Amino acid sequence: MGSSRTAAILFCCVALTSMVAVGRSAATEDATKFISLGALECSSNITKSSSRKLIAARVQVCPVRFDQMDMSAVVSSCRGRPSAVRCCGALKDVACPYSDLINDNENNGCASEMFYQIIVRGRLQPGLFSHLCREGPLGLQC
Image (cartoon, rainbow, N blue to C red; front, side, top):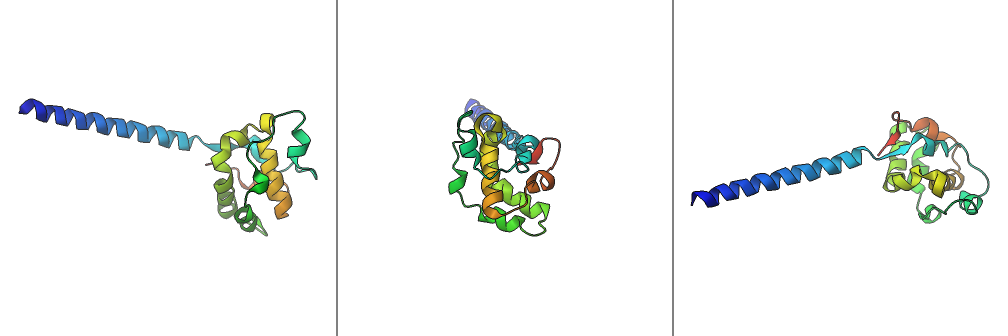
């Protein structure tokens, strides 16, 4: 009877330790997600032609169709004299799920495409995000 109780306690300890380790791993992964300063700089370099068309010949096309996404929350939060909390928070909602792709702009053009869609379609000031949304040395924390 004592050995089954000991086994049950041991099982609970192992299960709890595993759950804590998984929780820490997920928290660490989320904490390291960010939109890089280099990607934010793409908001300053907006051209009249979509980056999807400009870069298609030299790099892969971004697999995310930012041109088909609803950017109205970002646009409405960033018009006029936007607060960093509100505007950058709205940007995080759109950009953070794709942070790995956005940070690899040199190879896929995702940051250029996303900022082109937000700034040109939303008629926002180029450079808005590169100036407003710097939260630290890595860029915009997700």
